Length: 459
Ligand code: GDP
Ligand code: ZN
Image 1 (cartoon, protein in one colour):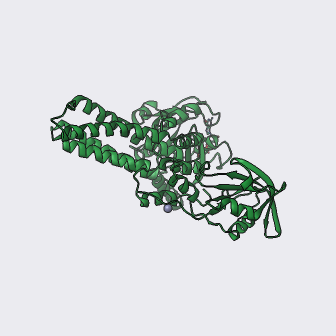
Image 2 (tube, helix red, strand yellow):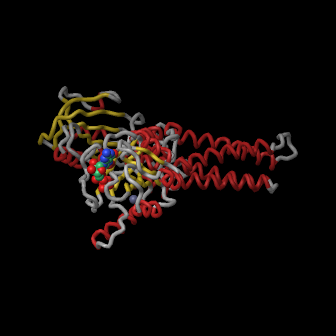
Image 3 (cartoon, protein in one colour):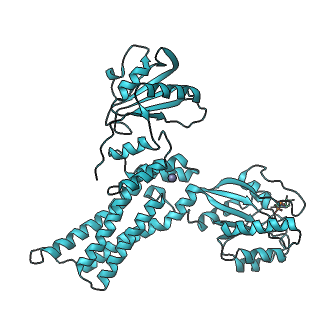
């Protein structure tokens, strides 16, 4: 498919719509310099046409005769710009009101409002960045933790695309060889060696499987993990939550049963943002108000992606502890054996029997926090994740990778069952096509649209 470059010149505020030091109005398209020239006058009387790409002029933005702001106009000439078009960026003083005035003047001068993600979309259509890169630009904008930003940056450098290309190249070579051999059996083309065919397919399969298995971990890092801190009253849930968030977020008291309401907070533990809620314990109670809390807590536990089950090591286990254990059975949980600074009375055998992962901690002193961090990273498989190697960022990418994997599976099955090599070729071609879709080289316009639909205006 081919896309025709747009003849319209677009503009938008490209910096976050919040008070800040500097705000940028970005103009992109064939008339960028001309339009900027109508609203911007340099101090030294030079025009944007007289200066080179990547250089700037200092001056003043105005709407007709009315002065708006002092500004720097940065000039990018096509194709050496983010969008691949002529681009002028007006860096202004940043107040939202002023920026809107500047933008309005730019519209009056002939630009049209940029749609969501339209700058990035044009960059894609002009071949400046790949589709997966565009998606990681978007991820970068929303990145939460340090690791998430790293992952998005790696995607930005094309790590995912590189990886996909490598898998694809090996499949393309194999498919080409197979069809050449099938089409001209009487020629000198060496017979396809079944072992090397196997090897190529297995390599592709392993790489795709690894990418797919890292998807959840990548998402955990990007979007955060819905986490519940569960346990009976007084085991130290609120204290743990405060330790994790580093501030007095929920009320800690000496009395049992006070954390009836659920407090929420997002904390970053290692590389993983945990979306914490400190629930009421699973009480054995008849008090109707408490029952509501207990029911809510159970619900939270069912929905949680991670449960920190807190126990008080200075006391023996009671029925409520055991109730909790039975409720979270099979859930992704870590036993947090708290108050390790006090003499231990807890039945550790019981905990060990019921939990794969146990961490001893003193929420009060912070002792054991590092172990908790490691246990969480291990459970969510975020520890071994190396974003620089490329990871799948979006459902769209995962779906394409999964279909590619299915194609490779079919091809492997066909090879093993001795079906004609034609069938193998068809399956491999299916996989190749899914991979082309993944990188955007053969994505339908609808797919491209839906990618950019999620951007915000100005990106
Ligand atoms: P929750 O009801 O589970 O939220 O428990 P809290 O966080 O309110 O803690 C109950 C009591 O245990 C408070 O007096 C805390 O100071 C105390 N506590 C919590 N964690 C520890 C700990 O690691 N060591 C000691 N010695 N006391 C703790
Ligand atoms: Zn949407």
